[in-house]
Amino acid sequence: MYKFVKQWRLALPLHPEFRTLPMLFYVPPMLPVLATSQNGNYEVSGLEGAGLAPLISRLENARVPLRYLASLFSAGNEQIVDEVYRKLIAVRVHMRAKTVGDMPESESADALAQANMTAEEAEAIHRLTAVPTYNQRFVIPPMAREVAVGQTTDPYNHKPSAGFGQLKAAERRW
Image 1 (spheres, rainbow, N blue to C red):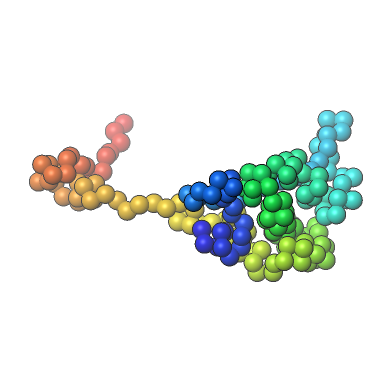
Image 2 (image 1 turned 180 degrees about the vertical axis):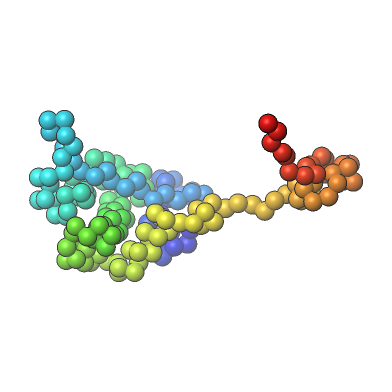
């Protein structure tokens, strides 16, 4: 949470103009890849003039208007949402150049410069958002005491205080 909100400044509160302390922070939704449908085929060619690779969409051509997202996440300040999207797009461009290799390094460096971030920071954002471990993605509370006791000892000894539990694992019968 700290990295998303404070360090990377990717997560934003919903409607900060209400001046309530947010319980949740949101990373704005990633923009869909720009493409057209021609003769029943999904075409991404012809979008090279978009400023980035054909598979990377620009903020100016976004399907969700930046002004609308700014009204949700930054009380109408489009610059804040623009900075977040520049970082998200830079991560997308950098990781595509690194993993797929169909984009020149100059485009990756340009996207990182526009977002004011380093390659290491982009890889850390990618690692935490795209490939987190189970424990990084979910907070699993420890097992309740009565459940832990029920699985290790005879539940009839703890019946008045903890309820019934399982003495041994269930078996599958054919």
